[in-house]
Image 1: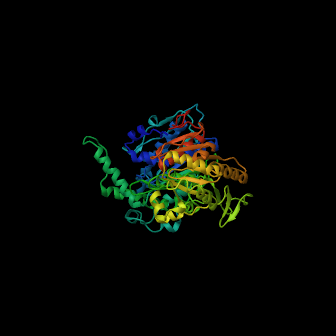
Image 2: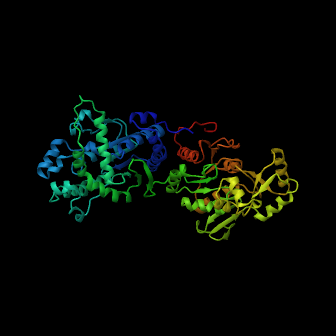
Image 3: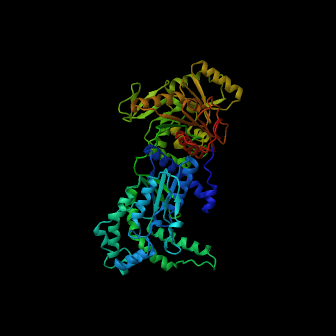
Length: 587
């Protein structure tokens, strides 16, 4: 599966491959949700982006415009709060009549909010007849460009992005304004005239502007100290890029320290308050890399309800390390959009429960290759009629218990002596050696309730005879990534169908089922789900499925391919052109 080609964008903005990874992992999914919001509203949407100086908000705005246009064919426009600064003469007047600090642009009270609202009105009601002129500010001369140099928007936009360092801020209480927060306020605003006027402007004009936004995205800096360091870094890069002949005003570290203090009060206020109200918060570390994506509200769930049924070993979990880290942000994304991820594995109840605890996953799960479905008690409004209560779960069983299959295995043990080992015959150390598990995890794997894994040690011809002998006694044999699984007439496909029908029965809506697997014992669910995602394996060929439509094959192995494939399928569900080819298997 191909990723969105951002090579031109990266080159234009002088960004490295690390940004490509951030974009793929966090910002492409964000774009999908904003497109979904646009579809649901069926009219242009206005998106605010907040980020302190140097956080990357302008780059994110440009990236979203690129994605909207290239991936979804939507017309998007990006505006900056900076372009609505008052002209220098207007700010000079403010500095003479209200407070000298208003000569420095940046804080609320130095923007033409009337012009900002008029521009947004014109864009949101664009009729494709007359172009909309968007102001531009020239920071080199600290003044607004003349109108003939403004941006001309010819087409009505589907999405308007409005970015700025104080986007989404609210006014502070009077009590918080009393004490200065830095030397600038203490020495140059001792009476609090400047900061109180800034606060009044927020309350009277800026809050109403920001309330127009359909949603707000925040790039959250770790601290104000980081913002200062980023701003200093920006200036150092600017100085290094200039030739001796270029006449551009730069600042010394001392000047930057004074300059950035204009922003300290509100930046710290925003860092404390906006994460509680912004719809999306991306928490940055000191290197401006995203540590976590937080979705504060659930206003923008994806339009098509979906259920994800996933194999574990070799699919969600790396074949060698059993790690799911490469899929972690996608798992968070699915949970935030109320798309259940339900393990459907050869693993035992004990093994899957431990993983679910790590993932904070509260959804049903399918154990031992479809032998039983475990639904947390009270997950649905009523207990499904054909389940029984076992501890904290409603359980749907499809096969006979474990001892029954051990008896069948024992009946053929003489004929195939020395050719296999079953789990019940192996020590915990032997299970650990054959699976790569720790002793503790091997103990969990040994707690079989419905079937028995068999480690085959003979040749392929004898294996075929063994399978036939077992099947003649009514057992079913599934080939997994490492083991043969002797069980009843159950498989992951049957369990998937039953659980999907149960969701639809209780929620009175249709669900799109997505099956994910990498081996032979996943074929039944891959064939029967609405979408199939086949994960490439480093140890064996991809399993052969009967279906052709809605079938995706990952580029990467394990959780890398898992995350890529999920994102591609969700795009496909939205009926938009993606970067995947159509026709044969995607790959």
